[in-house]
Length: 172
Image (tube, rainbow, N blue to C red; front, side):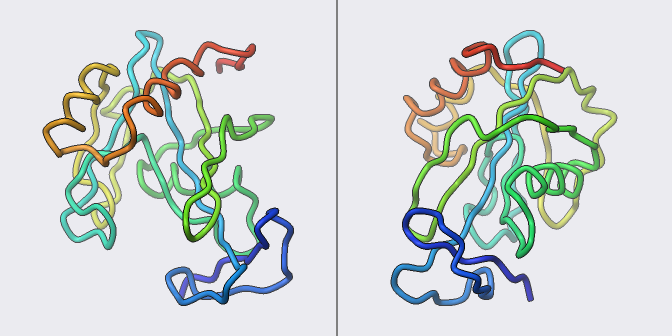
């Protein structure tokens, strides 16, 4: 059973935990994370979710996504999820989420990182990820149109691509 910390609508910790997909009381929210890794050619590392995933089975997604476990920070969760899903250590020391998106059940922190990761160095978690590849914004938007990518608004995807070089983002 995966436990998550609960927050109020202002993201103030409530000092409570709950089962990740369990029913929450009104005014109780959880945190999730996504990481978008860009290479030096400006492409995003994307992953295809396995057909057995609970949410968005078989669809392509940004580099990684997952829940923030009880007792973790968003950055710790992002690093853990990257290591678990792709078998690769991603150091996000000093990196804060670029944007937080509110969704019905909580808060979704999106981290952006720059790294030229050779695909052959990744070890995919079989129960989570079917395959990975590098893709341009245009390729991802075409995948959204054809229904093979999670239906993020294309303007949001463009925002993520735009943010990779904005506001002095540190490249590693």
